[in-house]
Image 1 (cartoon, rainbow over the protein chains, first blue to last red):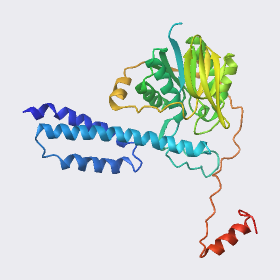
Image 2 (image 1 turned 30 degrees about the horizontal axis):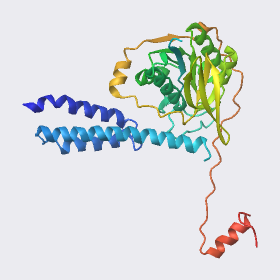
Image 3 (image 1 turned 60 degrees about the vertical axis):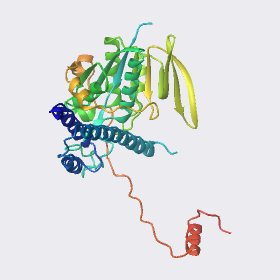
Image 4 (image 1 turned 90 degrees about the horizontal axis):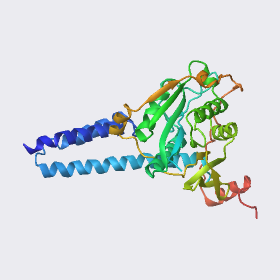
Length: 84
Length: 258
């Protein structure tokens, strides 16, 4: 089945999220629950095309999270150390 | 001129997002069981070094951290972000608290000589003690030019052109190499250490040294008398009408009285 070669990709994505979740402002536990629910919601998807789309969406969210973290850090520092 | 050898300092500090708690005996802040990470200004310094390497200006990026065993986690992050190798100067026991910028500066200057470093990029200050001294002291010990609070670094033949953040504006200076640059907040946006890169970083070399290897004795030069919380902001009060607001503002002299 063609879905078999998508499996490692999905697992990799999940691991990436788990790693990113450690820095989530609301805590790793909160993130983990949400993450698991989000993946479970699509557990019945079998169409390879659809899975690809979901993976792409996941990768987009990874980028968004990274951007969120760096912006949050930048803003906190700017607030602490710079008047304007 | 051949590719530069760059040294970056990476301090392990309490994570910027953690709410700092002062110990009841006012001897310091609570560090046990608190999340630590790399000093954000050092991340910016490291990012700059890695970018120089990607532009083929720098040949090798060496990350250095002076601190307890856990500092190695910070160095792993540095390696994951793109440093080639790391040196951990292990400081133990009560020396951790005695460690001051002067000790770090002495160690860094010794490493710079040993490793034939051409450029040292450091964070302008650490977010835990906010000393803003290490870069300046190291430059002085090595007798190298320094470009502090850098917000832009460019290589020109034989030196660097650095834009510095100063009060109310920017200053552009030229420094000859070898030199010390300390990073300001707007120098760049550090990349995120991704999971695959962290895995790969485990294979990169990490040397463990002691301050005595560099002939540095960690002897306290200052004594911490007391560490206290900043004053708590006083509660505000609600006003019912505009007239009341205006009269209150007048009372405290925030608007001129008519």
